[in-house]
Image 1 (cartoon, rainbow, N blue to C red):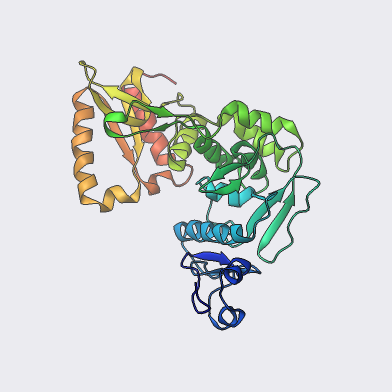
Image 2: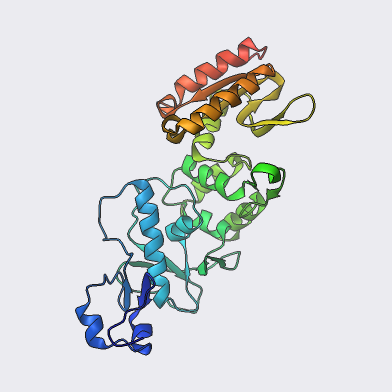
Length: 320
């Protein structure tokens, strides 16, 4: 590297650039954003920018990658930053342009512009590595979200953490364990005092391991709170020969009734829409009813979805 070359990766520390031969003048005169003192990043977003929820998530990940260039060995990402790195579903209202970094005593929490530092006690797990970045354990992260999220949002994050991941295609029968277990969440909650403990305690018994999206969680909670039976989550439907037909978001096998949430991509992707039509035909050929819900069906407490599900179950023989 010469004095006029800059590192060719997205983020780098000023110290590393100087050690590799970049001149101080080159660093001063080149307009590379400095998201944190001593760090330069070609990919770092501008703080305060008006971004969509998806863009906010990606922007926060870039900020984490940038801060990692100056991260001390005892530090790890925590709270909302850990949630982003674990791909947890987060509401759009939360601040996206501050990075949360934790340490254990006796280390001191960082005090850097753009960083919220935390000195954390009572952690039950050791930090894990995600793409080379140190992140607080998933169970500890869930507890740290208590002050920031509602009960239902905590349930959705919990569902995300404990659900098994499944492979696709010919490997679909293989299951990958969740990021943590319900016991892990309970252990972290009981290990010490937490802000928002009341919400965490209310959310914990409502977490289930089968929900694969926050909208599925929202639909399930609406059904159960309206007095409907608890559905089986992501039920594998097979024909008489045992051949796999479909995985159903919310199913009532005793009543042969299936309910699913369709995201926007199903309405805009012609190929996916054609596959869905064939899939629904295969489901109904086996004597199952099938109802799909869109975003507007989940408004006002999902009243439309609940009413439709209740009618469908009663018609199939269920009695309130």
